[in-house]
Structures are given as structure tokens and as C-alpha cells.
Image (cartoon, rainbow over all chains, first blue to last red):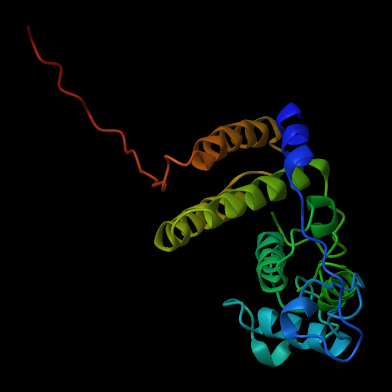
Length: 123
Length: 98
């Protein structure tokens, strides 16, 4: 902490006044970060497509059976261990970490799509 | 771990799934080939147990969970790159005479 304070005391950042709107070079724009969670959020269609792709590529699944409201165990004949594997494959696809409590609830494409679509960090 | 329609997981089932998930997560941090091997062994073992072990045999399941957790802790160590399973069959041992 003391080191941090000492460093902060001595560092001075140059303050730049940005030129008026219109003549903004690309490099300066990159520092202007709009903190909206919606500008790069996935569309529902994209989430649905990618979720279905992940499920279809699961080795034990018959891709022709896969629809957006299909239930992993009841419709696709998977067991609960497969369920865990599918949710983990979805984690990797969307770069998420899904806590156990939520993961245990995701047992159908519907729930997977809902969860991922509503997740602010889905990528 | 029979597929349960209507998915009401018992506390014990949740522990098993949590352990399974733990193994798969740990496997992610290993090199690709080791990861595949780990996944294949863990998957086979969990499934075999789910078929052979009586769901009501709580004592044995708890033992397997404890053992699994220890193995998982070892697996998480960066020094461990993989695991293998050995089938031990009993054979008559010859005692050497001194």
C-alpha cells in the first residue's frame, strides 16, 4: 500500500485535451470506452444458433432431434453426467463460468438459451 | 445415476455431479491430450459406478465421494498431468523363503 501511494505521488499523466468532435484520430477513440452492457450483447438468435450447435455437436446426441425446446434427458436420452458435460461445453462456447447451483437447473435447450441470453458476460 | 425424469436431484446426487464437474474443470487446465485422457477415464468410472453401485448404498457412495475429492485435489496440482486406472486382480503370491 505504501509503495502504491509513493508511486502515485510521483506519477503524472499528461492531460490531453481532445480535439472537437469530427477530427478524432482512431488512436484517441480507443481510450473512450462506452460502458454500456448492450452494445456488444448477443442477440437472441445468435444465442439460440450457437446453443443448438453445441448440443448438436455433442457426440451422444442425434442432431436431427435437436430443437430449441428439447430436454436433454427426457428427449435426447442423455443422463445427468452428460448434462454436466453439455453445460460445460456451453460454458466454453460462451466464455462463461456457470456456478453449480445454476448449472444443476439447466436441463433443456430452453433453459440454456434463457440463462445465456440473460447473462451480461456471455461472449 | 439413472436418468431422473423431472430432475429433482437429491443432495447426494448433487455432490456427485459437483465432483464430476470438478474433475472436468480440472482437466481443462491440463494439456489437450492429457485432458482427453482424464475426461475419458473419469467419465468411464463415474458411469460404471452409476450402474454398479446401489443408489441406496449411502455409505459406499460417501466413501467414493471422499476418495474422489482427494483424487481431484491431487489432480489440481500443476505437477499432475494425468491419471490412469489400474485393474488389480488377485493372484497367489509366492513368499520368498529367507
